[in-house]
Image (cartoon, rainbow, N blue to C red; front, side, top):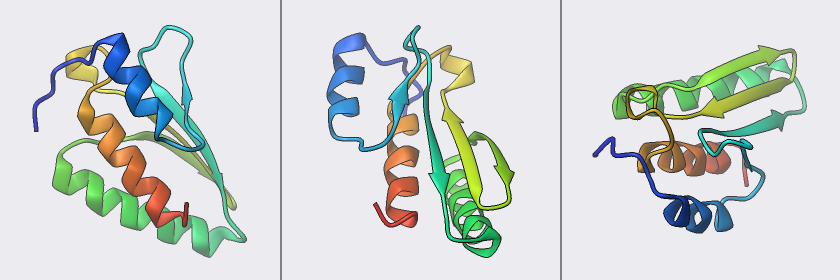
Amino acid sequence: MARQKLEIEAIAEAMAGLDGWVLAEDGSAISRTFTFRNFSEAFAFMTRSALAAEKMDHHPDWSNVYKTVEVTLNTHDANGLTELDFELARKMNRYAGF
């Protein structure tokens, strides 16, 4: 998949169909906080997301504290958002049950 930076119109369109994610003020990243019932569910989500990210060769910036996983996505080599970010965000939403 191409790592071409998306234009603002394409970002707005992708955001419209992406529940729970927030666009950074400068438009360079999207982020979301996922909260699970416990650490095991959070870790399972991270494991599944990590496997998808590895297959895509597109890795999130994230952190985990107990049952909370904070995720930020952007494409560093494109210096902004690409379709890869939105594809991974949609997968993460599915893995979390959204």
